[in-house]
Amino acid sequence: MKFYNTFNLNTVNVETIQAEWLFDKKVALDILRLDKIHSVVSGNKWFKLKYYLSEAASSNKTTIATFGGAWSNHIVAVAFACKEVSLQSVGIIRGEKPAVLSATLKKAVEYGMELHFVTREEYRSKETIKQKFADNSWYWINEGGYGRLGAKGASEILKVTDISTYSHIVAAVGSGTMLAGLLLAAGSQKVIGISSMKKNVLLEKEILHLVAAEKINSTLQIIHDYHFGGYGKHPLPLIDFINEVYSQHNLPLDIVYTGKTFYAIKDLTEKDFFEPGSRVLMIHSGGLQGNASLPLKVLAF
Image (cartoon, rainbow, N blue to C red; front, side, top):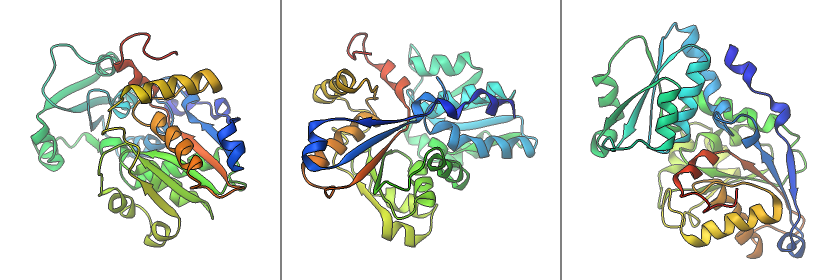
């Protein structure tokens, strides 16, 4: 598919973080810069979408339909990817239609996506929505790319670099799809998920649905303490931290996922969560377009 040719995994690199808080605890931290893959289908999105798009094409579907919010990385990634492979795209958007579309939704429309807004109550019943828009030519992808094909694609993230020397793999968790993929591909490494949502107690169950139970029990830990008030919440201390990280390490982070994940790694390191000698790989899962929800000059990049 032409879509795949627009992505160059050679742009991805692993960057080592040099910081006193790591030296003091004898912990090493590397960042897998998946955000460098593509300007729109960034980070983990390409991995999570690739097998869905292939199946849609082989099934002779003409339209991809999916779900998301006003600032969804997934929505804009699907819109762009569909444009690249000459598929139509439909976005079912959570919430009433605003007077002015978010920057994300404007981009999605620019890439050809047809938007349908539903109330938050309606949005909870995805199957009802699918029945309402029933069309045999449509191929449905769950919110965030959740599903076995999404996890299969995400498992290939750990093929981008040699992970054999790492003791821990840390990543943000939204739908749980990427983390399921990381679990499928990880060896002896402990896989740590930093939940971006408040009290999302269903995460373990959602991930368990995509991977074997023994993987969950032996290598997975999800930490729910670094949401900064809830999904998409970004109080000033988080903004200041993201700017500080960029100033010190030239590492751009986002306010929903990776900013909170990097903060969690720092805090956990200082609290001796990682044993001395640990080697940690953080997956930079992209999501930087979500920063466009902030006023200009709030972030330093």
